[in-house]
Amino acid sequence: MKCIKYSDVLIDKFKEECGVFGVYDTEHLDEEVSILTYYGLFSLQHRGQESSGIAFSDGKTVKCKKSMGLVSESFSREILNDMNGYSSIGHVRYSTKGKSEIKNAQPILVNYKLGTIAIAHNGTLVNSDILKDLLEDAGVIFQTSSDSEVILNLIAREAKKGFKSAVTNAMQAVKGSYAIAILTQEGLIAARDPYGIRPLCIGKKDSKFFISSESCAFDSIGAEFIRDVRPGEIIMISENGLESIYEVEKTKCATCAFEYIYFARPDSTIDGISVYKTREKSGEILAANHMADADIVTGVPDSGIPATIGFSKKSGIPYEIGLIKNKYVGRTFIAPNQELREHFLSVKLSVLKDNVRGKKVILIDDSIVRGTTSKKIVKMLKEAGATEVHLRISSPPIKYPCYFGIDTPYRKGLIASSKTITETVEKIEADSLEYLSTEELLEILGNKDDFCLGCFTGVYPLSTPILDSEGNEGSENDDKL
Image (tube, rainbow, N blue to C red; front, side, top):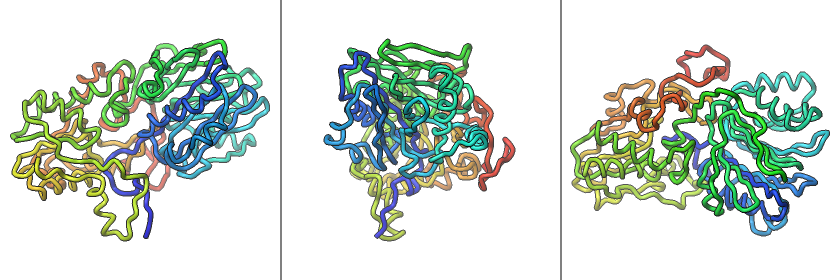
């Protein structure tokens, strides 16, 4: 028998990115901050399931422990009890650049002339290869294939100018998306890219400051949400408290719209916008503008449920649970042969037959990537007795890849890039299909100038090197993507 990764099975979703978390006790009272980081990472587990790690410091040195697997698989109480200090950062990873192996797990820890430094990074640098070549030409040796190590080396090379200056210069040199936590003996530094593509926020409890990819992590530890890290802002947390040490002026925010559609937990708030309310509103807009004749409306769990509730409220069509998610499907799945592997979706999702039998069903999902899973779910519903299945998607059609920290297929693998809605309906064997339009999404989010919509429109907040299917640089309009 063969164990395969859950992510290796063709599940028709974008892969999560990564999650970062950090804590600093300004009064140096709490020596169990690693336990707080553990709970914070637990709340961010949805953002990455390949590896997890925690770096911690007692003010004299920085140490790190990490492993492949989930947070609960990586850290026992005994391990956490030995991770004493008053500052800590943590990371959960899904690899978007760099192989899925322990050497690329984060935080990445390095020793340099002035001490020890660790970094946890969510996002993707689009100029990392260029910077890496320049650093290697200058004699730098890299231990990983992660672009996060580029940032560490940029900081280490300029640390003699002062740590704040070194970090500021490094952040000005890198291009792309990043939400970063950096830990040294002196304190905790957090930075967000100038476009704010990846989320990052600040919390506080008693004498402790926290940083996190999502605000939901603060709820798990009883911390108060203070604010989001502003696009282009670098903050430092030390015994002197929280200080904003650098901020780009007149920066245009371009937060990834997919954070609201799929990635973030529904109980998070990003840049002042409730993730749950955004998803519920998308369902209301679908009901108002993309109705179908149906007996019930149901959703694909979990991220499709808020939109389903919104659709039901607006339309008056009863919301029924049509699909049950098996919450105990782990990171690997034992599949003795290809035939059983094809049935993986039936292990992950099952149909509540009594609720769909003999019914015309509106099925709500947050997105379609390849169309493979949508086809299987439609088939499952019809085999369970649904007379019609009308698919409604609470995002615009995904036509272009993402270069900023999401693992997307090449353009040719995106069904909306190559097929019309009519052709897609035929492929997935639904009775009808409607998407939320880009204009409707912007109406829900409230400000068309504040979001990255690159995967929908092909217009990105900053230029990127484009790679073809062979990994070679090509033109910005290369249809091989």
